[in-house]
Amino acid sequence: MGDLGGQSVVPSTSLARAAKAEPLLVREQEFELARRWCEEHDERALHRLVQAHMRLAISIARRFRHYGLPMADLVQEGHIGLMEAAARFEVARDVRFSTYATWWIRAAIQDYVLRNWSIVRGGTSSGQKALFFNLRRVRARLEKAEEFAHATRDQMYDAVADALGVPSAEVARMDARLTAPDLSLNAPLFTGEEEGTARVDQLVADDPLPDEQVAESIDGERQRRWLSLALRSLSDREMRIIRARRLAEESETLETLGARLGISKERVRQIENRAIEKLRATLVSGAGMPAGAFA
Image (cartoon, rainbow, N blue to C red):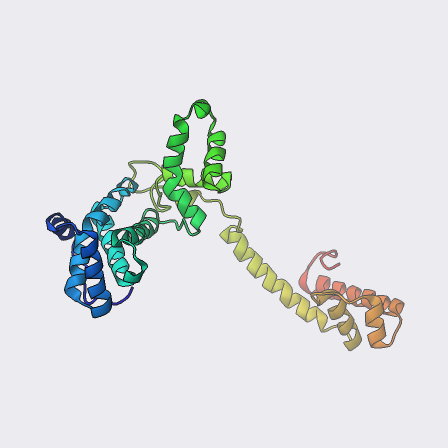
């Protein structure tokens, strides 16, 4: 927001009382006050311009009262939008200040509603904002039409989607959000309980159980230690082949590995099989593992 010459944000109750007492401005008075503020930075002109249009901010705020937010907060946001309009207004455009301010007031209130109506972030795109603020109105209008007297819910969603230019799936999701309140995951599962099973306890988790995670961690560490000891029984060439063929993220082919070592691919296969047998024997004898544990 631009410099508003120290214009303060006062309680909305005071704004409402001041708005009733402030006389309306004619077009010439609007332009003169706007000119004095824009060209001369006259703070008294700014104050009078804003106060004279608080009726407009309060009127627009009332249109959003059905979203369940405090009316005082809606009026306060309208006041902020009004001050933003005063900061940005250009006299040279030859437009009534009230017409220009309406857009900023509505935008400020809509942003406040989207931020505070639900703990779930929504309405981030222009289409979603239009859907959020117009779904109920459009659906109520369609329900009055004779052709939709016996329409199913899906048919109504399709009609609303066509009217607002959004996918039907988004209409269904937004309708669910508007008709159901936010629920805390920490709240009791059953109404009236102060303690007991919470909603978060009913969420399905794909992770292994704690005892399975501990067992996996212990067994995995034990197996890595056994394998490390078994690998020490291999010769340097056997170790290189086993690492390239069995332990690397991308296994090398017999032909590629043979060319790098200067031997045939059949010889690489023989050395690999011999190394695996040595590892199997070492692991079975030293760790008590079954014979098929390393294949």
